[in-house]
Image 1: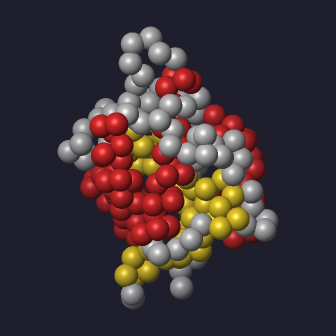
Image 2: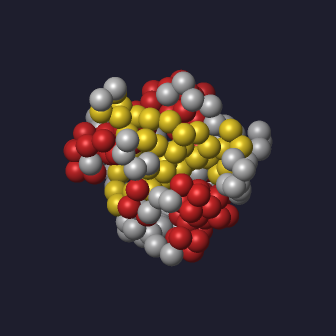
Amino acid sequence: MSDPWLIVGLGNPGPEYAATRHNIGAMAVEAMASGCSSKLSRHKKVLGLVAETHLGFPGDRVSVVLCAPLSYMNESGGPVKAAMSFYRIPPERLVVLHDELDIDFTALRLKKGGGDGGHNGLKSIRRSIGTGDYYRVRLGIGRPPGRQAPADFVLQAFSGSQRTELPGFLDRAGEAVETLVRRGLEVAQNEFNANPSGGGEGSGGNP
């Protein structure tokens, strides 16, 4: 069996945050676990919900550890570092899913490394593991309307129309992760970064 990958979905803990835009990374990991008929459970050494499972098909399966930290977003690095240590996973086998303001809703972008764009979860991970050289799946949530502060926008629930599209978006995020770990970044980028749902690449940040 292949060495495992660590797939982390960022968010904030507690029911008051569960349906907010900032939690779309955690939502995606939860959807992946459900699609694998796996259950995320509290881990004895990691402040997070974890499931050990596989992606792919019999004869072509990749071992993965799905993780949704139970820390607040700006403290995500601690649980990520603990999971990497427990499962002996190097940064080059880490994939982090997170919300991205500068990409339209339902569009996603895969990349490796780069800056943190003001995203507090990514900043915390960099501080904790000492590098930003890991894979990211940037899940578009769009820009706030009018003069609404981004910090307020990301902590609000998706609109009614967005909620109808959300399940399909989360499924596509899981497909992008599976393509990344089974077939590589370039293949995944070619298939998903130019998704017909649209959305432009940007460097802006999230709280």
